[in-house]
Image (cartoon, rainbow, N blue to C red; front, top):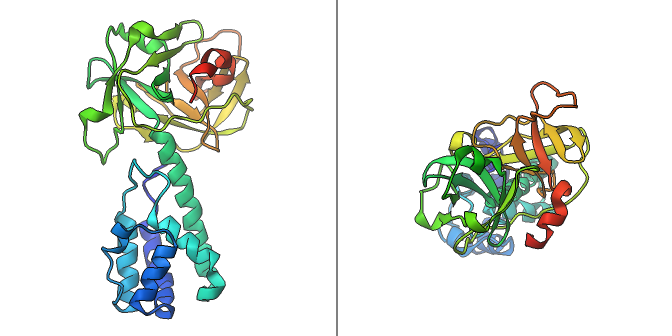
Length: 308
């Protein structure tokens, strides 16, 4: 999925037409600004809009501003379109909104709120690098200064030093402030279960993942956030748990080199497992097209004290 896509190009015209009707009914500049303010839209956004234009011009400008807005890492719960359309839905009778417009607004709000949750989850994910700049795996911040990832990332690469890089997205700049050295000497590692809890040197400003030891079931929907081939972070499409054991899950989400250690989230965007890769485990039937993950429940007592 692309959590940065709040409005599809195919929806632009419909949204402009719907907001044009709103702007016709609310045709005074001060009234329009009041509605935007009451919806919780910040003044920086409002100040870039001309409130005194004709309804169709106002609607076009508003939708264009929604379309180009980028969610800030400092406000991962905020997108002006989501706030505004949710406000209009709540006051639909007052603004005499048509049912089809309410349906459009509701769909965009629901998608937008899901995107914001995905972006919040994505902010907890970092690329493991060794040497600096070369991705060797994926990790997730589970405590203020503690990363969770797979142990085999380090044994396979024989890394003596490693770093984590956050916010590596296609639309971001590579900033030194997003890179932190890892304290491998103080890591809590398990080669048998294949996890590593690694202290981060410095003070990351990232969100920390919300973790749960919930029982996973076959058929359950999940999402994986990873750095395939060591590239920019990717939020997967929804996949499913295919097979479950006490210390493993098999899932059908497409992964690649660099995905090891990636967090696996449930539909509530809670961390439930980390991705390990090809199962390589004898004694069970493997479904073609699946790879393996390590459920948090299987080593919950070892990580519980680290959780935020």
